[in-house]
Amino acid sequence: MNKRIVGYLADWGFHAPLKEEQAQYLTHINYAFGLIKDGEVSIAHLQKLEALADLRKMFPEIRINLSVGGWGAEGFCDAVATSQSREKLAVSAISVMRQMDLDGIDWDWEYPSSDAAGIKCSPLDPQNMTAFLVLMRQKLDGLSLCTGKRYEQSIAVGADRVNDYIWPEALPVLDTVNLMTYDMSMGDRAGHVTNLMPCAGAAYSASQSAEDFEKAGVPREKILIGAAFYLHAYEGVDEKAPLGSRMEKRGRNIPHDNLGIEWTEKWDEQALAAYYVKGNVLMTGDDRRSLIEKRRYIDQQGLGGVIIWELNHDKKNLLLPCLGKGAGADGRTVD
Image (tube, rainbow, N blue to C red; front, side, top):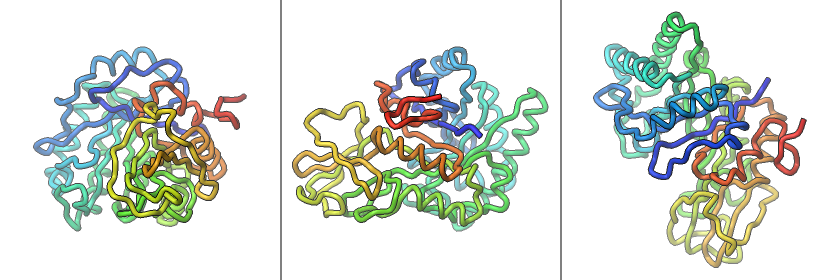
């Protein structure tokens, strides 16, 4: 079974057109982000839709899905609360999919039943969202009858949010469950944000997330783990032992492309993860070596593939080849 290499492509100010050397490694693009406005899927704020149409023409083999939501995206709780509101949301989603000529839709609610992002939530969110996914699958199948094409449906789920959906009902209507195994930090301590394996100095791991979701009933082939093409900074850490140390403040996420030569790269053999240090500042995220390890893990465990946040952070195409089909020890594809 071919693995899914799903790259998020954000319609933001630093958006760059996808290059052929990137496209060859991708199976899917999750175009980010559609929003929910007045109970309907909205794309009125997106600015690069013309470029998306060009991308469709240039790379017809890549499946293009719209990702709806993102951190702090409001509207889900009310939109899935009743049968009437779910119908309204589903109909609007189909309309947008027709307008954008999409291959599927990805729901990125962060997170059902949680107000961590400052958005409305309810204890009924998991069952309401699951009911919506079932309805949406029916709408997608109805669209297929008109077009002759099958449409995909996926969800992006927090790495440790295994209880956000009713899996016996949700799994039959989902193509993949995309685990956001990045931004896994330790509160007031500095640590890895996207480590593959458990280790000291990390709150969680991608492998533990995959195991937890499999125990909850998600088939391995439907599980996609996350890769971070950005680096997360921690300031004021212990210079001698930065991982797991207390920090003074969090810095901002930066694209991996922006990493300068003044940073010292290090490798955590236990975590199978990279980190970078400069004085009392620590940055963690994926590098070529950690991505090769993730691809190896995906193949060995029979997982469905990987999601990447985010393609604009790898404009030099240094990271994406490491996740490509048949990635060798140097990150290049092999026969």
